[in-house]
Image (cartoon, rainbow, N blue to C red; front, side, top):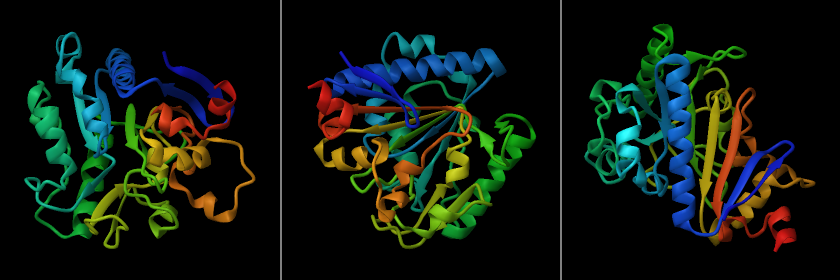
Length: 268
């Protein structure tokens, strides 16, 4: 059973016994937010990331979720994307399509992915324009307290360096405030060209989930969540900067990833 607590500033923390338990809990949570969002405003606007996150969502295509989730009301976006062809193995779109979206009844026109035939700068500009059009037509809600969209749920993975989406430590993209989508040509992780949501967009969501597993994430998780006399370098840890201004933040992790958290060590 998961060890769960709420931090006064850093949201709800759920440390799971194993990956199976984490996957079940995550899928339950996604289905719950989907149902609540559709009841509230007739749609569910979900933002995906790449990596292992998609594998943890795999139970959505199994009973009972495959039948109880109202897939026709889903609108799907990406928090970041590698600027490669959509058929390329590095593509977050391909990962989600192959393992999830092709197996459920999400309308293709509800899937908002990047244009993979243009430059990285043009891809970022076009992606932001597409989202702004969807806010204008009220498909995506607008934030009440910022010039940003208010997505129902943003799902983020976290790297061992504390990066989320394609926002890396000490990278200038962390400072971008006026754009919803920015681009990188020098990503510390390959491939180098990427687009990413900016922090104001992530922090305007109704719900943000950060998922991390494995011992290699433990130190970054500690720096992202615990109360610390942080050195200045840690203040640029992207995961630490995820802080929804008017929404919920939940951290899903397994025991190895949570092993350095103060509360977890105390509970052992």
